[in-house]
Image 1 (tube, rainbow, N blue to C red):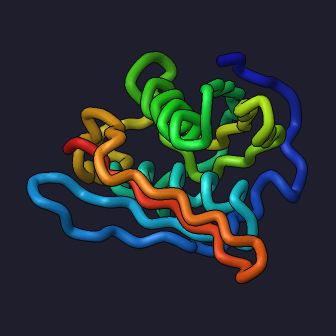
Image 2 (image 1 turned 180 degrees about the vertical axis):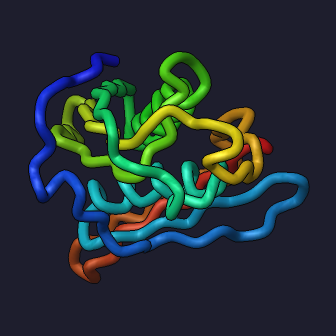
Length: 159
């Protein structure tokens, strides 16, 4: 996780459309995200998690950090990607992301490099949503059907 400095471009401030929802699950919540590619579905799932922790309308893009995730398969990659995002929020700089952009999405070596745009979470400025304690493998699903242009992920987070 490295903080990057320098000026932001106009594109850094463009926020993608919301392509996620929250599904009720016994004592937890299930994130359902989709996109025009599996990369976009992963990005949307990351944003769904941050959106559950606070109202993203209050988050400004003031800093950018880079995270990396590696795994042995796609489910592991999704798990470790979300876990790295949660770690970024849970330790200094306590970054709440308004936007995540995967810059490397390698589905053969199961590696992600992602830029995370946001600011330090501050009680008083950012409404407190629900604390996410952990990512789980429970009922995790990845729908990757290029012929039907269907890219979706389902992840249960422990709250």
